[in-house]
Image (tube, rainbow, N blue to C red; front, side):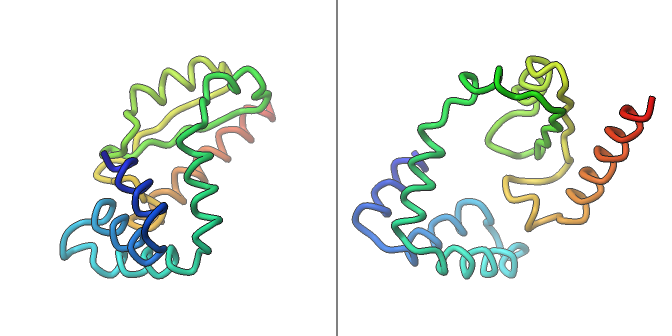
Length: 136
């Protein structure tokens, strides 16, 4: 449903309406008000045609057709309360053969805004691990 509402807002609305809708859906509640306002301010700066193009590319992207092209190590990060399940990301990591997956607890879709320190630590640990494997 969220996809169709965004499509309608992008067709008949403006970037301010899209930002307001996305903020309410992705960052609900009083506790996330500051982060929600920051995210909405960023989204409002994006030109609507660019956002439309990005959105269309995202909903029409079929990752499985491109997996065979990946030739490097990949670390898939999942938030506990993300739209894509951790189990799905573990399957993708397995299919990639050079992939790994990690779930960040108590996080939603926008972990880079809500818990940037946790995401940075995960990324750092992954890079250290990849570097250690390279040295072996």
